Image (cartoon, rainbow, N blue to C red):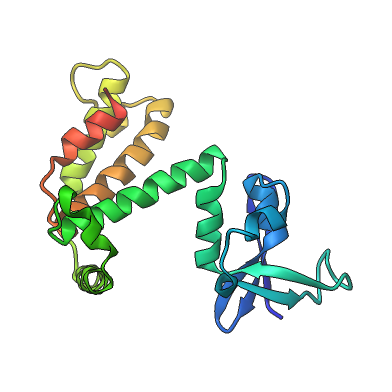
Amino acid sequence: MNIKTESWLDYEIRFVEIEGEWWGIAKDISDALGYVDSQAMVRHIKSKFLQTVKLTVGKNKGNGKVTAISEQGIYKAITRSQRPEAEAFEDWLFEVVKTLRQSSGVEGFQIFRMLDKEHQKETMAKLQQSLLQPTKVNFIKANTIANKAVSSRHGHVKSLKKNQMTPEMLIEREPILADTVDLMIAKEKFRLDLSVSKKVYEKYVH
């Protein structure tokens, strides 16, 4: 059996490969997500997302069978967790769904149309098509936005160039630039009606 171990917040989470998909060990996942025990976690997960496996290596070797959870089952476990990291992930998932809703032309008051399977298929088809299309990014503009944002955070009226920034500013600049590029890509792919610079400044400056 193919087994991989991932470290997350000092927790070791084992994954086993089942028919080309990676399933996580329930005990490891429940410990990492702060559940009382694995049974408290899996009782809310449908059986189709669970499998019983026998580990041949690792800390459970010789101790019988253990429960493994599919990727979709893990997402369900995460959304029920009270860890702040899990709640932040859930917020991000909602933003992704909202972006998909906007890209498909569905207004906020039409949100229940997203429950329709046919609409879901159409939306995913549009998403896959957009991901296959090349996206041009204006990196000069992205760098300008990032420079201005980090400069403003440090009280500079005028935007500093990268070679004028302190080591601390350069460290802060990297995630700002990454977010700027990601937002520029999303804006083009989903044809979003927004100002990239405004959104970046709202997040990092104001």
